[in-house]
Image (cartoon, rainbow, N blue to C red):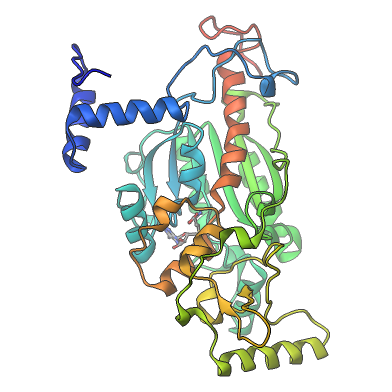
Length: 409
Ligand SMILES: C[S@@+](CC[C@H](N)C(=O)[O-])C[C@H]1O[C@@H](n2cnc3c(N)ncnc32)[C@H](O)[C@@H]1O
């Protein structure tokens, strides 16, 4: 490999980016460029518009034997970004994030450490068109508290209304709808708890789907269990919407099949020598067992759960930091179990190791962030299917990228 790269006619924008990134790291511009290129080659992220269509893409409604590969260079915005689970999934299939927004200062801190960007704050303040840059996909895991069972019962017990009537959070979906109306992103990707569909006897769900339909989007939804990708039972509803004015009335979208092969096991994500501070005290362990016993007698399944190392865990929740009761790790006969370390909680969600190396918040905040997050691999699998529809749209039915088709509608 030559020591120096001599490239002429580099556009100013690209030159500035190279200079800025190289000095930020800091490495020489040549080293930076070579690293970027090597990574692009290794991960096959380099743009290559006319790759031969892969076997995976043949059949169905795919238009031709040639196609744009997964690197169709789309942009997206990451609203209610949390710690960037959506972002990781979308970047994995070639997406470029143009904007993020997250109100929680601790999640912002993690996001900054992980992606080098400080997300904008409150989404309800983004009211003008120029507040959000143009984008191809709007991604949003909007807050689930007003819709989840735990959220509903908690708010009911406080005598407060929930769902859309909850003034502080339930209306966030309507802000989202306003943003969608203003920007008309070609694709919208939403994520929420499974229970969203049955909340308020199904009225909440109907309202959400009805609103998206009224906005002239073709809507697909599916509950996906992340347990095919990570050793955790985690069911979430994914909603994918295509602008009918762009894709017509029947875009050929299908949710992904879970990957084949053996199911991930809990033991694969455990640390070898976790700190003793994660072991439950005698007092807490006794309390959790008594609590579980009381609930067992009442005939319900609440309480604590010591996980099976060969199997998968229960769903990690945002309250895991309190006592770790939903996912306890056995430590052998006669020993108190322990809770997951923050790194293990991150692995249970499928976040990559190089990001987990950078824990910039307390354990409590880290557990909350992982419990609130989406599994990036699930987003990646769904995003791959979205990209296929974008390819279908770009290439068109005659298999030609350049020559325009007639209107599809
Ligand atoms: C379900 S979590 C989304 C997590 C994200 N998908 C991830 O992978 O980390 C919802 C997020 O919305 C944020 N949020 C709540 N209200 C908000 C608002 N008004 N503006 C911006 N973000 C908000 C919460 O702080 C929380 O991090």
